[in-house]
Length: 283
Image (cartoon, helix red, strand yellow):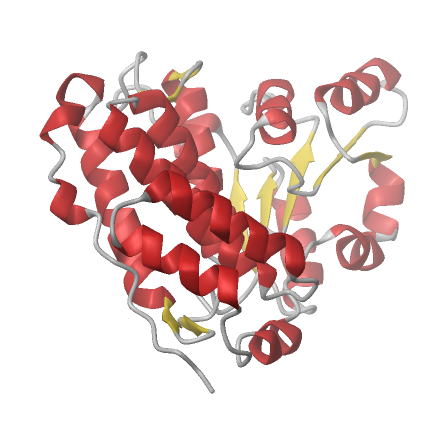
């Protein structure tokens, strides 16, 4: 898998609260990343206000979107008493973004500050808890809300051979026929009810991203590259004969190049960077 341990991301200022969250999450096999302030995402003197990852997200919020999409946490926790984090904006970004929608978000705050609790729920938090309840039930809440890939089921599904539509889709992809590849891979995805169906969702998202690059659509391409991480990152390095590790590296390389070039230089992207998917047909 791309990540050895699932991640719990906690935006918490109080050290005591951080320690309690870390202890509860690590006891369940999670890696924990705690962030106290927005400056840890993008220091005031180290980011451009117009830094744009995908329209209309710019500045620090754009960097936040890029970071959280790259980290792909299994659970995000916001301390509503942390005034160093724009939690209302960031909860809304997670809950509404195509690359982050479905990412579990829970928050906690003072039980007497009902207005703040209400605002967090309106912003898009899946659940909002009074602080006392949150910490008294913390291990159970992490187990309840965290979204974790079933590694055994995924590994089992990845041992199966590629179906007809997937093979045809890969053939189109490798010939640079990305629009046609998308449709065929979508058919493969629709016919598969196993965890392995995410493989086709990942590659069809890559095909759309490449298609947008060739069309010179910077915003569309960057959005798709963000979205693809949701499906590509959890896959094993090899799945159904496809070299996912190689594909993942190539996709991230062209994404980094695209962002570095910006919309003004998208036509300078070398099409040779969009390499064929490497795969073998399993019996």
